[in-house]
Amino acid sequence: MPSSASPANDHATPLEGVRVVSLALNLPGPAALLRCREMGATCLKLEPPGGDPMGLYNRPAYAALHAGIEIRAVDLKTEAGQQQLHAELATTDVLLTSFRPSALGKLKLDWATLHARYPALSQVAIVGAPGERAEEPGHDLTYLAESGLVTGIELPPTLYADMGGALLASEAVLKAVLRRSRKAGGAYFEVALNASADWLALPRTWGLTQPSGTVGGAHAGYRVYSCADGRVAVAALEPHFAARLCEAAGIASRDMTTPATHEALAAWLAARTRAELEAMSRTRDVPLLTLAG
Picture (cartoon, rainbow, N blue to C red):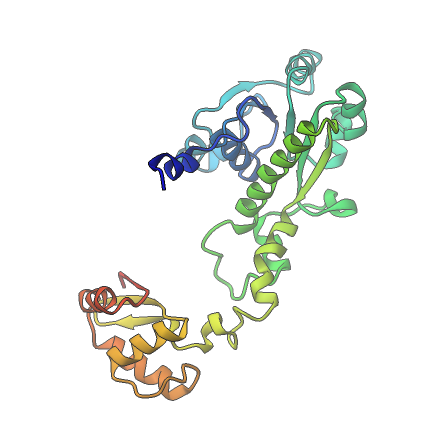
């Protein structure tokens, strides 16, 4: 294969020549805008005079999310601010928002008003829940809880609904551009964060990640174990990987679901150091990753 055929895909710019203006705050909107910039779009973010709350929560996160993106302070509640916004929208392909529908209506940025004024403009509206529920208050944690992804009292390790919603929003921008290429005019896309949580929760809904599921703990080759000086994430799911792991551990049984196999493997891993397990992984081609305690 020619050398030019592989690395080029890492720098694909399907949104080159596309202009995206964002009014979306906190995490999902800025993360979606960053994805658009990475795909080649020209991105402008208009923030309220008080700034984006993310700048108060975590400055490093705010800086990372807005790298390479032009930011301007605009008060949309004033006539001057409205004029600034509409001057930008006149040359914009996609508008990204994260307000409730009632707030968009007050700002005269509801889809009916926008589409009448800018027929070629598309809008990607990030909301918490779809349709009539779009006025409900919520955050990542409540959407994950609704989707069955909060299983104890500890907080999830990352903001799955927000980041998943950002991907769906950037996907919607791509859909808008595809419509434009077909001369179909501007379109409205609603991205609901609880729907992104539902999408991420599908493996659990199907039973895959339930405790009784293959990748939920029932398969001895797909678990996190203690080892002599830390932990080890073992992902020997396929039969050939499981067989190699059992062979290394001296376990005769190949039934990875029995309590005996779980116990034997746990005991063997507990007696090995991270270095020993990493060496075994390389030698026998077994997928695992060791972690500090």
